[in-house]
Length: 185
Image (cartoon, rainbow, N blue to C red; front, top):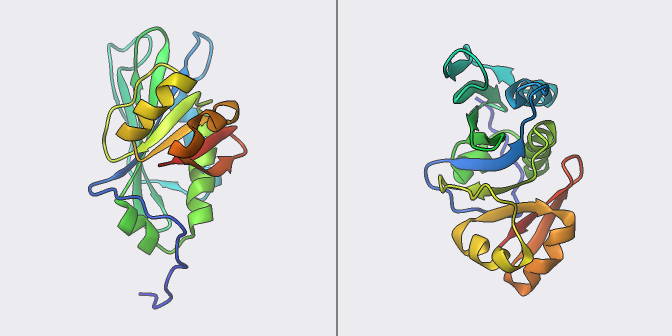
């Protein structure tokens, strides 16, 4: 067991049970299922598979649910994908509580790079950092940002929308690969 302490993280999000990055993307008929792209991206960031993938569905068309457990920086992670209506897919990266994340042998920068790789791989349109709350599949609008900020710990929005949050949130970090900005309330 290492006695080296992880460097302090600049932000603390009050997640109790889990830290879930939820995002929505569109899936077109000839596109690969987002889990394959996400798995490749997370493996490139140092994650490894932890067991076989799980899939539920009718055996044809999009699966209703697909998931894959992973290990990254001594943490148990999971990717989870739900087929929604109108060719939309909810993409989730699930990690332990924020306290466990911050105590892991990694840095905050490495965590956000992992999140960015995931969001870019699934071509996320928008998302949120949550402690289990559902995410509205519709893309956020400037008028709707206040309500979403009250509901979620952090929002992932396209860069052009970040300024619309005004004083209600801080643009904490730009995720360059995905083009999303993390807004924290």
